[in-house]
Image 1 (tube, helix red, strand yellow):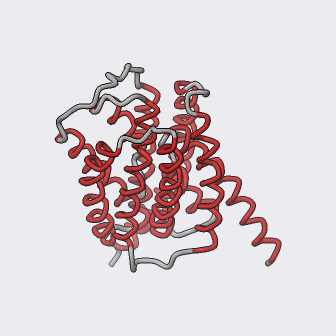
Image 2: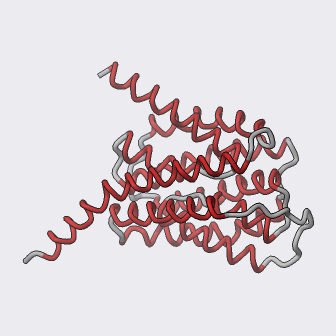
Image 3: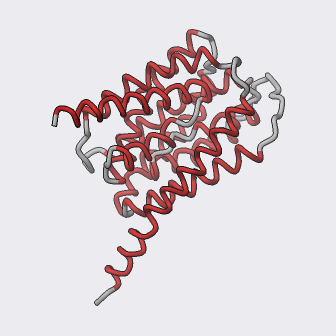
Length: 265
């Protein structure tokens, strides 16, 4: 029992450190990797994996936000504009997720991963304007859409937020990453509150994950601008596709089997 516990802690720590490093480097990728780790490595039920991911990524992003704030990478006006609609949508969709099966949520999660990977592979670099947009409407609409995904499947939305901030607000990449982390913090906090009372928090795994991933974010934040963003995104996209296919392989049979049972007389 003791050996199993130590093995679980070590495996969780290593994986969490990697997640935190990616989060600090990209301003994204935290929950989109944390959910599969919780579900398929640690064996959490889907809803517990999704809600626990929101807690972990929210806490980790809060620390990473502070790190980027010290580097003057966070545009707080943009963060609160985008986050105001995102957190409302995140809370409401998390409450509504109570009426969906965990398997269906994981199926949607896998499709979101495939969509994110495709967007990363097909994206073309566009030089940001470096000048803040004065209209809040595009940010509010984008924030609401990201919030729905966060509450429904536990995705913090950094892979959508970062390009949105560069294109809609004209932020430079490093500022978009820092601002994205601030938005993810708000988004995940609202989503986690939406799941309150639906599950019991696995505190040991959550605490280990938060500590290890937080350490990783400091490494990632210092690496911004030192690693090729294009190469990093391409590698990350390939990883997302592989994990999404694994989730579909594991989830679709269970979902179809559940539907057969529910429809049988």
